[in-house]
Every structure is written in C-alpha cells, then in structure tokens.
Image 1 (tube, rainbow, N blue to C red):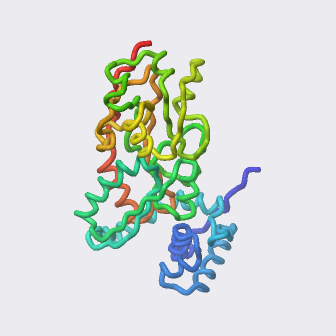
Image 2: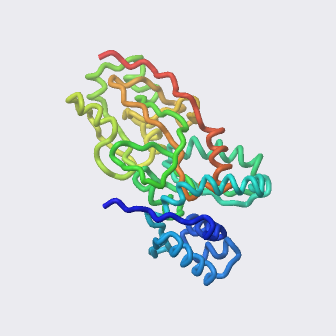
Image 3: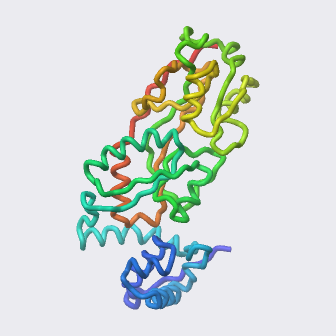
Length: 321
C-alpha cells in the first residue's frame, strides 16, 4: 500500500520543534536529547507529542536503548538535514573549533584499514586538534550498519560487497582502491620468480584471512569461477597475523594492497601478481545520515577525505597462465 504523506501548513507549524526533532534523530534518546538542548525531559516529550500531531505519525518508537525513528521520520530528515545545516551555518558560522575540541570520535574498521587510517589521522590530529580522542572499533561490513545505527561508532571505513545490503540511512564517500597481491617471504622458493605459474601457485601452501570465521574467502570465489581450487591450509582472523605468518613460514597469501598507503608491515615480503587477478575493491567512509547537520562530523569527514582519498592505483601486471 502506498502511503500518502500529510502536508503541513507552514504558517501553523512551530519551527522550534525542528530542533527537538534533530536532537532526537541524532541522540536516539529522549534524556540525551533534553541534555543536548538544555531542556527538561518532560519538555522534550511534550515537543515530541506536538511533532507527532503535526505530522500525523509516531516519528519515534521505543527501542531497547531509547527511541528509533520511523520511516516517516527518516523521510523528513532526508529533506530537513541539509536545510538545517545551511540555516545553522548562516546564523552561527563555523561552530566547530578543532583546536580546542575534546570530542571523542570512534571509527569501526578492520585491522588492515586501521593500520592505514590510524597513524595518518593521529599525526594530523596531534597538530590541528590535540584535545580530540580517536578510538578504533573492530568491525567489518557485516556489522557496520548496526554500529552506526546504535551510536557505537561515528564512522565506519571498509569495503562493501554484493552479499551485504547497505542500510538506507547510510551515507558514504569513496576513499581509495584496494587491489590483491600474492605475498610470500623474500627468500621463499617461489620468490625468485617474477611470475608464478598457475600450477605452482595452486599447489603452494596458502593462508587467508576470515574476519568473521566464515568459510569462503574472496579469492577462492575467483578460482571457483574458473573451476580451480588452491591448497588453502590455514586461516587467521586478523590481517596483521596473516602478514606475520607469511613472513615466518613457507605459506603464501593473496592479501590486500593499497598503493601509496601501505606501511612497513610488508617488510621482508615479496609481492607478485597472482596468476588470476582478483577484482579491486573500493574502500569507503560511512556515516549515519543523522550526522548530516553535525559540524564535528562534517569537519571529520573532510579531514578523512583530505588524508586518505586517492586516485585508483596502477595495477601490477597479472602473470600469464
């Protein structure tokens, strides 16, 4: 059934209620919204009642941790957030003072992404926002949506794939491309070859990363699409462990490679193209749409883009079969 949205008469609407609506969207909790606005909880509850009457919709429903917006509330926020940001900027100017801020920002990401993002952000924040606190939250694309929705994380950084649907509230910005290379220790028997033959590659002892513990690595899907199978003998749950295991053994691994962003973790390893190339992946920055009017979040998005956005890397030539 298609629901017809009720129109609101501008002359009769109390625009002050929009501040309460914004606070409830951002905080997801009546008490926190009241604190944010320096109002009493009954005052916010009364404003919510009037909002519900104005839009003929519950707008927010109770959840285990507070309140959650209805579909109608999200539709309203999609239109209102940009307008409120413009109005606030016109009236208040730039309201986020990075130099004197003690804000806490949490980013959900894997250890691979954290090794790239963390050092660059901490270096920059130490210079322009020394009082800010940065926290990394271990996470994957499987739980990005929940972490953003329940306010456990302000941002998430990673790659989406076709197996996981993006929530409607999620906003994103492209950062960089990740390609996949074959890594082995520098004195591995195959390291003397610039191009590893397919048969030797498949027969070698392989290691891969399974962040969630589920079977079926990305590269195995590439092989299976060609009717091939490699000798996968081990999986680990962290990329840092994978690089170290490869460095200390005869194992080889097809692991991500970010051109121009890699760290010293690849020291002592040789990188070659796998016989069959794996599709490159796009690393993106994600945030919840409720932060579209937050000066802090918009400032941090700009900082992340400044430090991490890259043009697509040049590919290393794949080996001939």
